[in-house]
Length: 347
Image (cartoon, rainbow, N blue to C red; front, side, top):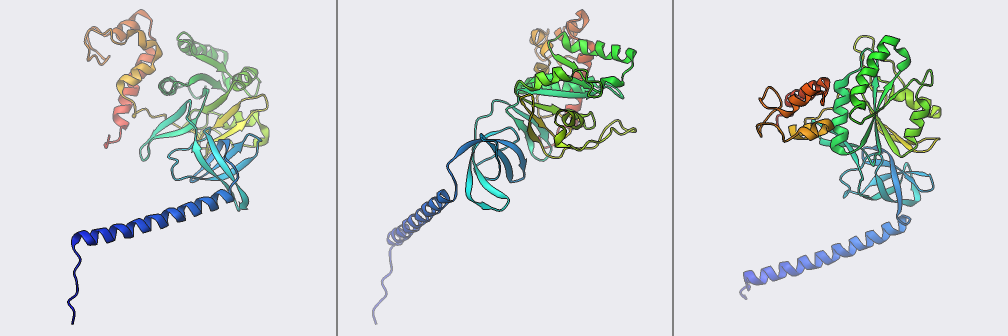
């Protein structure tokens, strides 16, 4: 009976290494075969734009105007309405999914909002104009307008303040609204008073929209879907009246979608947001988001000035001299307070 020869540790390691190399070569060969098979299943890559996003799928519009519902590569971390992408169409229809998104082009701008579960969540990309739609009744909320303006400033997207349903106001109410809007006009923001019913401001809105890609933002029930219906009646977007009790409407748009407008330009219709949270920003970022604050920042007596009741506060001085509107300064403190209250405990 012969004695069985035992292998040394080095020999075992060498054998295991050779086996792993063979497995790696087989895996590479299989991956190459899969890639060749996939190359045969899809057409050449082409540019497109995300019209809408549904979970792990997206509707992509090609240069020829056709729309293809696509799967997303696992390497794509984020994809939103308005993104410029590279995609490939399937050579044979695969049911409802007829393509694959290969890559996302660099964004020139992105509108994001904080989410308690997902962190900072992109809403739409490559936006030229952020149209802040506000309702004039039951009352115009300057606090909500300021929240959106801070977001627009931090994301460097041009805003337009649009007051909808202006025909509902009496002469005295309209005069009051004009006075409130003068606060924003004086610091360089553009405003538009609109009534789809009377037609006031509609021609000016068409001109704004024709200049690029715009997005309507604002609380639910302020008339965003009604405006879209007026601009493109064939869409038939669902509308809902503002609640008589709360003054707030229910969400009427569930998925952001990009539309091409007859007069030129693109419009993204986004889900309504009742309150645009800013708890993901620092206090300094919010201060910078108030454009009229910037000449005064860094000029306070104390470096750690909180711009509250601190002595020698430059912002307080600017309010006293009329360089900063008291209403805006008051909203600034309300925003900081709400940020502290709303910020998740894990941050």
